[in-house]
Length: 217
Image (cartoon, rainbow, N blue to C red):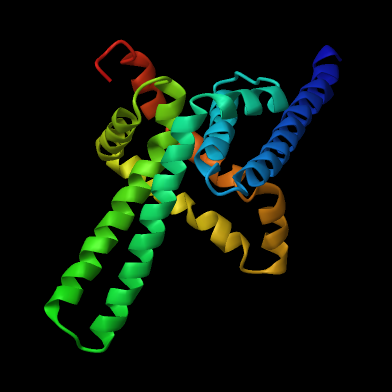
């Protein structure tokens, strides 16, 4: 009889835990979209969401609203500068890449082909570095922005296969927009679902940064 009483209790605990995660993801998703609207605050908004979800995976479940805005304000000026740089590089690189692709289709010179692959490399490198910026901002507070970028680049190479999986998660929001059913998921989990997967994939890189905190990085 005692075991039979414990089973409903365990089930209730699991359901409660699952519901807590759903609520957490919905709230964080709303906050991230709201705080990303100015564009230049994309990096601090994503960093805050990543921080909360990564902490939750480590069983460190902090108050959502207070934690989100507390994380948002940390190194805010550096995160805003990073946002501006990332957005500017991606916009210019993607525009020029598409332009070079048009010239190649028109049969123009080899220089346009070279330009196409250079801009494509820049886009890929920028995305790879950006994927690790939230992690570095979390674990290396106060360091210079150029060091942050170098460390993010180092991590993207050190954990290359994880980086590839992380990059693939960026397709999730776009796939959610393909039909009306998945669009509902986008409204509630458009940012937090990929960020949760990224947080899970980058647990090992985060451990590496924690273990090497006293090093020159």
